[in-house]
Image: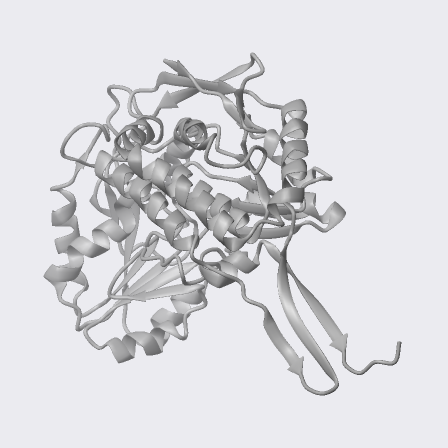
Length: 473
């Protein structure tokens, strides 16, 4: 077991108080991290505030070089990092590799983004231009499902915009993040990036801290609402990427054999613990029987187990609380007599937070497993008759994060996509995000954007400077 330290003002430090981190595959302690509190937070914020004074004056080229150094450090140590990520998060090695290399690629790509001045007026009367200025000190709060990707998508745009940041990883998955902190300690100027770990009680302290100017949060809608309340006192800027109950719509012309495997992984990647995973799959009645059977048959070929073992396709649920919630939703479906195509029973023997791949056959629209975000390896399949009907059903949700349409007729797919009340819609693919395109939710899936120029602007204020020409002074 290894002890990991926090990064504060360019130094790796601890306070002598520790939190234990479990491997969800076997419930064994695999590391300890500092249990930071108000004192450590105050030091980190003070360091970020000092660093901001100079960092905001740096050129884009200087910021780009630092961010590319972060990308290089992650990529050069990817083998160590992805194995550590699997140990604490549970996802299979292949998916952990994707996250680590994806985070490095995201950092490199976003380092190229620039916020150019916009000329509003340029005539004989006056010159008016809008420039973007950094917000200041950012507080970033990261979830446990994609701890490295989510950390990078907060650290990098903050730095590129000229901000400094204090980042809090989830107490369930802080190890890989702190190892990266150690790797980049001498890459980033002291105080620009501070990473501190603590219980969930640390989050409200960050949200309410008077010297933090902006909060960027990824997590549940319920917690997002609390963050809004906490940030209201001093009108902090906030970006919230929250829950989703993403619908996939499969039209009758879809190729059953081709889409079955893709639909499976659109729901079950990372054991279903993906905010933009397909949470509800609507299949046209003409192909429902064939496609539901094909998905269930494919599911039987996928191994559920320890993510560090070769051949594992779906790992454990990351933590006990989420594990128990997923089991509760499965039990609710059983209590209501819904039909299961696969799964439904957990293995009573052994340790680890394993849930069998579970697929439900056409539960009603008001079933909990349909109406709520499950965030686990449980997928409801439902029949639909008409396009108008399925659009209404897909939109009948408090969430609006993402969705997908599967069809040979891409024009029809786009027509349907434009009627879905979500921030992102894919046609014939899933979970594909671009560093250069904005990503964000509608309705209670949050507001603001990450990625692209829109995401970068979230870390800035617009400032308009107007020069009066030929003024009498």
